[in-house]
Length: 178
Image 1 (spheres, rainbow, N blue to C red):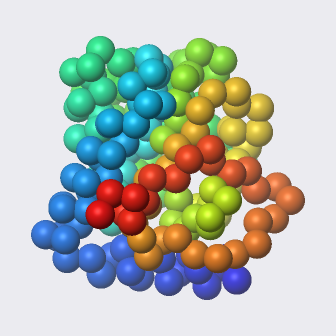
Image 2: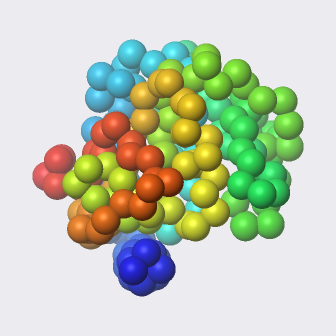
């Protein structure tokens, strides 16, 4: 079931027209930037989006303007992931085709206030289906800060979470802002 939902979401994401995507991304970014969890955070971990994902570049730009410490993920084999300080001049493409930092200096997990968690599908309880690598579930297992995800309306689906899945604390989705 997860693989079917994952594939359906990917198909719909890639089918969004560029104009529609820009409008939806702007609305979701605006809602996220206005949220109390964002406003109260200082050390903010964000993902560097692939072209079909919700664009995080504008959020990163605003977070830097707001004086926040921006962190981005660096992945390693066997599902290991760390967050490092964002430096736009020190990025490379990972084997997954995702922009990733060159640095391998981990920012302390306990000092991260908020993580914007990516995914493909979410349910009403905040459980998510990601790309299948388990990187975020492993990282979030002992994370004490806040977690938020952004999603388009079609990404909200009914499914049963598995025992190893971890929910995000808040999902800001398209219907919240229309």
